[in-house]
Image (cartoon, rainbow, N blue to C red):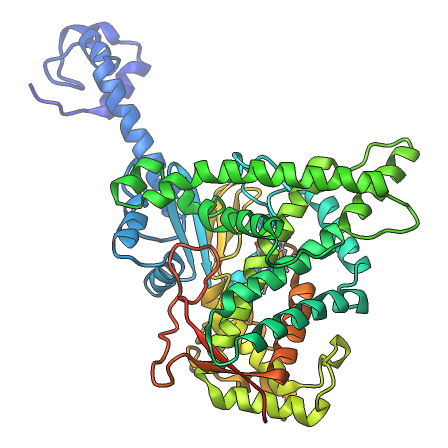
Length: 536
Ligand code: HEM
């Protein structure tokens, strides 16, 4: 049987309504088939399925042609193989992704479990998406956070997000971000830490633990209006639970989309168990916060607002007096408190941890900071109002943040509607994540980006801004605690440097400046420090 289709003559004859003739002789379209056989063939299930498949594949090819590039996408598996490969190689995702950007460019597409993930690299692409195109790229992917029991600031969208973000910023301002009341809280922790260091002079100590306690207590004090003793049971419990939300859960990274059994198969049992552990931890945190709110209710006085919780109770009262329903629900408030602990402790503590490491690895930089502090202020305490008067020390803090890269990736954003970005189609609902590491190390904006060099932030002895400096991300979703974190870092680093010198545990053993794997924030691999009192 031959299948040569004489389409023209078929159409002509059709028009002439001369079908009968062709019903008997099959010379016109498909040799040896009459009209009825031809129709039966065309409408046979097999041929229809083939046509449908060809149509769908064509449509798919047309639809994926304009998507951003990335590692090969395999049907069903997507780019899951790529994540698994990096895990097996022991690579950290942000670094592996950054390396892929050399091959695929600044906008890349990945597929995991049927979800589209777009990664952005380098200052220009991130700025274009998160600032110039903020309306399209400032959402959060609800589907990624659906298991979270509460959506505070980090995980909410739309009017809820705007309301709780504004409320929190106003409360933080009222409780002293940039003011003396907060300065006192921070300096109290500096004094306690200084006492601890004095007791351990010349002993190898882990600064990581001390910094974690300091910043946890600062946030605790802002939220609940009191500080806890470092060696109390309550402090240990709060600190441990908040820490484990971040390190165990990792629910806010795309890798969490990978099913638990895949992690188990590739030997990463810790990740497989993480989600279960996190549920328990969140339940504990919720009941703890609820208890604190109830205690505050009993002693609340509207003319004496003590802390963030009181701020919430005041808002609740004012809204109910006005007969309206508060936009700041209890659920949002819970979420915001957890967010501040989770987003505000590990990030700041790890930056401080990097600070001591960079300073002890670069003793000349440390010496110059100390000389500047001593020359300007002698032994008097450094205050927040002194910010801007210590250019070399402040440039050093910027360089610590740039190279420490504690937030190597932004929190996942979502593309709120289908859009075109740099010529690529970005499907609605795609998860969009900025590789902040790639901006802080962007060789188009920094000379020798991997070198530790505070002077790069100075021009004629004055601090200069480089827009590619992006530890807090940019745009409307930029870190809400930026000001608080800057204040903490400035006061803690300057006041400790004024009093102490930090040295390696073994003078001739350098730290390799590697990060601990598997954490959301990039912490340096553990190290010890020997502290001596400052004699510059
Ligand atoms: C050195 C310290 C810190 C660094 C490097 C840092 C970094 C970041 C980054 C990269 C983001 C993600 C932004 C995005 O998705 O584009 C973020 C978000 C956030 N940070 Fe921080 N952060 C720090 C300290 C803090 C502190 C002290 C607080 C406490 C108030 C805080 C609260 C938040 C919140 C609530 C968000 C979510 C903002 C939103 O979704 O609207 N952070 N931070």
